[in-house]
Each structure stands twice: as C-alpha cells, then as structure tokens.
Image (cartoon, rainbow, N blue to C red):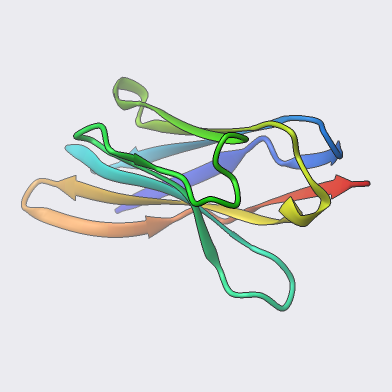
Length: 119
C-alpha cells in the first residue's frame, strides 16, 4: 500500500506565493506520474500540473507561467510552486501518483490541502 501526505496549503493574498509538497511512502519501486489537481466548491476537480518520470511536464493555460511542478525522485516527493496567486485559485489541492511496486501498479491520492487566496 502507498500513502500520500500533502503539506503547505494555507492562506495567501492575491499576488502571493505558496508551495505545496506531497510525499509518498510505502511499497514503491518508482512513481511514473505525479500530478496536482484542485477542486473548488461546486466545481469539478481539474488538473493543474503533471510530471512524468520521462520528464514530460504539463500545465493547463489557467496556471501556465504561474504554477510549477517539480519532483524529487530520490525522496518520492512532488512540489507545486504557486506564484502570482489569484482568488480563483482558491480550492482544495490534491496530489496524485501513479506508482509501480513489485509486480503492481496503483493510482493514489493525497488527502487534500486547502488553499485560500484573498483579494
């Protein structure tokens, strides 16, 4: 089994920055894909960043140039640096990992961390 634990959420002012972290632990051989999603009240969960072990990184237009995903494979950790925050970035942020273990593959989610941006 694999557990994902997020940290770094909180309150920021518009134009400010926050850095989210997510650490994976458990039966892990490699993490193929890391991703960050967010879900605002009354809205669907949406992808805000993804990173594959092969080096492919994706950010949707809504956060491109403001959010940056990075990963530390040795620490089984992913980060989301969020700059120039806007009130519309307010949401619960979730990390997601596609994990390969010994003869297994799983898709795991963190518990979510609240990000609130005030105007």
